[in-house]
Image 1 (spheres, rainbow, N blue to C red):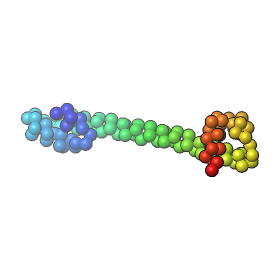
Image 2 (image 1 turned 90 degrees about the vertical axis):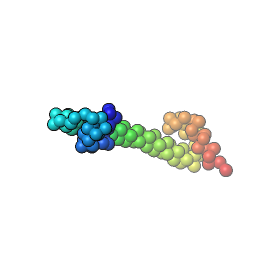
Image 3 (image 1 turned 135 degrees about the vertical axis):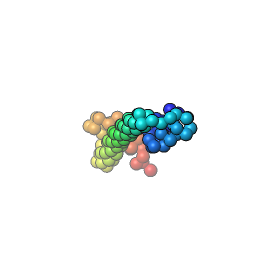
Image 4 (image 1 turned 90 degrees about the horizontal axis):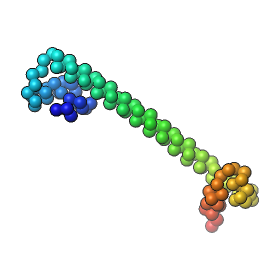
Length: 111
């Protein structure tokens, strides 16, 4: 019964019918008003949860995009500096990119 009455997917009219038909609860105006009130509350919670989830996902996506964007920029900087005959150590020291990352890019360019 709680699953039905608290579900945001079931309309208040269906909840009221279910209370009367399936559970034998006499549905008075007072019960109808309480069910409608409960529906508004659960819909509000559902909406809040969806909103929170949306913004959390958006924030995580933006953070992931920043990290990926920085990594792509780092690779381009490393490639440019390698083409200008800078050593892996020089590139690392000048850019604060870990030398392991510089060597990884350097290795990927070597046939």
